[in-house]
Figure 1: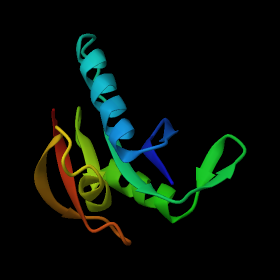
Figure 2 (figure 1 turned 120 degrees about the horizontal axis):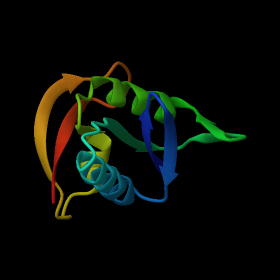
Figure 3 (figure 1 turned 90 degrees about the horizontal axis):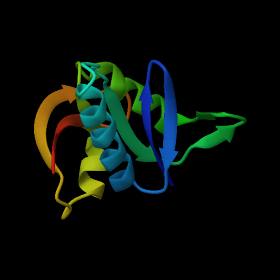
Length: 111
């Protein structure tokens, strides 16, 4: 299983959804000091590694979640939200749906 942050400029894979969320929050907070807004979309699932890239349904869903994010927003699929239950991460339901299998998305407020 891999989780990823996917946006217009690239992607990253992680060994757990919680680590992907923590990384996205850290990037967002660090870049705020420079007045740089980033957006991130996170989904978790099986991926296919193709050289320096990833492919498969999980990668596509991550890109769709990212496309829904606003400036300085970290969005996660319902799959990610369910995977980090019990952590200190706080979410706000967004009510938006992705095309595909991910279902509703939630905005990460922080921890």
